Amino acid sequence: MREWQGRTYWIVGASEGLGAALSKQLSRVGAKLILSARTEERLTALSAELPGQSRVLPLDVTDTDAVRRAVDEAGDIDGLVYLAGAYWPMSAREWDTDKALTMLDVNLGGAMRVLGTAVPKMLERGRGHIVITGSLVGIMGLPGAVGYGASKAGLINLAETMAADLADTPVEVQLVNPGFVRTRLTDKNDFRMPQIMEPEDAAREIFEHMNGDGFVRNFPLGLTWMLRAGKALPRGLSRRMMKG
Image (cartoon, rainbow, N blue to C red):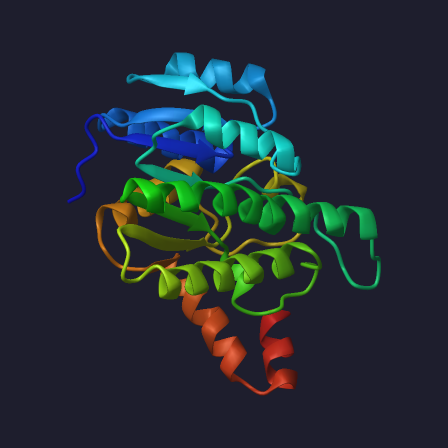
């Protein structure tokens, strides 16, 4: 069990949904939180709900200069959870390049900016805990996931690379790959979402993983195994399985 009381964790992407649920979970066990997202009003409202100490640090993760200032303002942190995300369902038959690039820039580029600035400071201080939020959709290419799937696959690769590079350092890296979580983002979907979870349930999965020393947690298990099986099958059979 990790020690949480009095530890400072920076939650990037905290304002609603999974980020807000995880913030409440961490606050209940005594962590001091720094809450970041673009919308200051939502962050302020969340901060007021938390039982423990927190402060609001509005941030647009696509702004490199703003990220550098935010890392300096966050100061001496024990951990960082990257949850910031943008999503639109998108097929390669109806490509929206601007939205696809926004998903890549927020989901993957934002993580590069934040972690690329924060991790060297953790190494200098001699401690750190990084949690990167990927997605099961990053395991294999799925219909209607142009942009989003690529960004999450990139995050999975980023976490794997960081874990390898930082293995002999005091900075720990963990990866979580949730399936469908009920948020304003998944509300955009008009298709069946197997084993969709409430944000609070997904947050408990992430918190449980953060308490351990394992690298990756994929959940829910049923959807995880379905996707892994689909990736192992011949492409034609896999496509038929994904269609239903």
